[in-house]
Picture 1 (tube, rainbow, N blue to C red):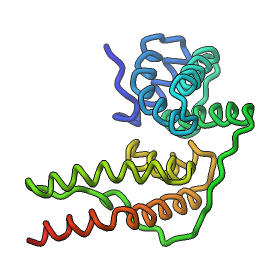
Picture 2: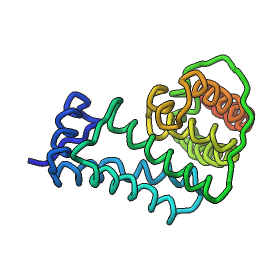
Picture 3: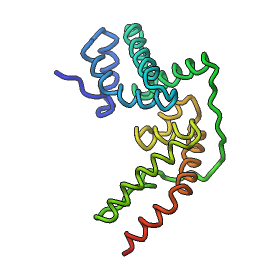
Length: 202
């Protein structure tokens, strides 16, 4: 019977971990297939080099399998893997003496789930597509750590707790990054958002 992705059935995670600890290669392959794409994107967002990012993610999975008999997951499997990739990527950056620097500002935390959701309808759909592309361009220019937090929240759908674990920071700091990202992105996309609001009101 094929393995069920852990993120679709959180209550089955202990069973998945137990199977991998017992040496179940099918369970390990299912884990790899489920999480590799998102982890690869995450590693690329840190290293900005695709080959090295892929090496980092593969090394994390190899480490899990090499120590599968004693593998322990204290949070969720997803959070564990993101944290492991983050740690290994930063190790690589430290070896190359590359340091990320970013500015932080305390802003009022607010919901961001639909902050830049496109409207419906022909004209709105076109504007929505342009908005989404503009959003990705604006995200690319955010400070590295702020960008990572925003991307993990918007595109990977991680909770604040999971982002905190993955990035090695507190949930409060995650909120600061998300809030700062929203503030800067709204400023960068003000014209698109105003046009979208106008079309919706017609």
